[in-house]
Image (cartoon, rainbow, N blue to C red; front, side, top):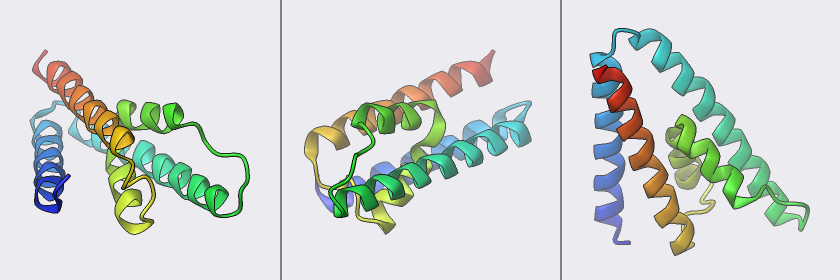
Length: 113
């Protein structure tokens, strides 16, 4: 994926998340939930990166995707950028962006109810 497209996806996704949080009746609660899940996701990526570097047991990719799906994708984006982890593997990134889209669609649906 070209770097400009990745940056566009990051900015657009974060903008949509911010808009959905602001539009929500429970904006403070949603922001706190996303912050907690994003932090846990970042930690999971950091643990997986350390395990990869020392040839230890790894966190399954399905678990990392599940974290992203339930709202941890901002933490995953931060980890992919700062830790340079899971930022190259094409199939992983494709599934990751699908989880981001699903998460934002579900949040949008919940906010609109």
